[in-house]
Length: 457
Image (tube, rainbow, N blue to C red; front, side, top):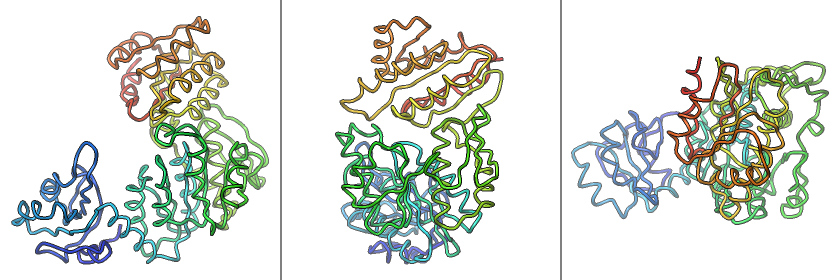
């Protein structure tokens, strides 16, 4: 982000400065005191398990120039940091103030072309692909990592600078009302819903509620609203949003003439007479690329920019990235839903491979009352795709294990809720030449197995 003074921050946040250094420069924003660097603005948020106001002093000691704090905590914080010569900006509510700052920052860059992306999975990959293409047309700001919530988005939009031409930001929701608050910050001209699945149904209650909340992204002033051509929710969204979503996909994306799978090398997309080599595996990544093409076309991206942008894309760590070695790993550990698990398992089952195929699946989280049914569905998919060995990890995966036994699965299936037991079993069973899928919800930290499996000779 471009530097701004503490005085400007206080003005944008509609807060009051305490401290001796109102003209210090802010060059980054964080809510995590462990990620503070010199020049950071530390935003003190109160959470369920911790309160950022307890870490203001730590943030200043790590180099923060200022802290955004609640008026309820101002007295005790002032007493603790009087000798540090730093700026404390007092507001009624730090999150609301951060969102207010972000909205004003976006409004001050009204010429930036705006893209918003939501969905149950595929947001980050689609964002990266769209940004890769649009970067060929002009300077493009994008969500860093997956800062896509009502907390992450307002931090992300400060990536927009004076010479930014395009902004491509994820807008993920896991509770009702969150999209409304994000639209108050970033109202896209072009938007994508990658898919609508069971993710966060535990918080939202039903698929229809999920669809209703995500589809708010298709606001009444939208120029182009894209949804997957095979989405079961298109008719519902048409009805509740009173708009006509545009389909993206093998048929829906203009200019796509043919698709060829290159196995672990990705896909060949024939686009307007030119081949594009997409270095990303699985149909889900192909669909993300087709969404990116559709979005880029609305901003005038031509053949050259689309070819260059997609061919320069490389998979994000943890999102269907291939790790080559004695054992080949598909690391898809960043997150898991029923839809994304089904898709990658279909890909594994159809992929030509000379060695064994192993799937290591961690629990899918935040599914609420749908948890058992969702994991049983994964079990049935495992039966259908014909892998050699299956390893299930996490208490929720017990439902999948029981279902596989009930259906008479006669291949090797291992279940445990103990990571150390899983690791030891993988060391024992995995052999040179195997193809191993690692997938699970973020909380399962499946990436711990990458160096373990990679070390097998």
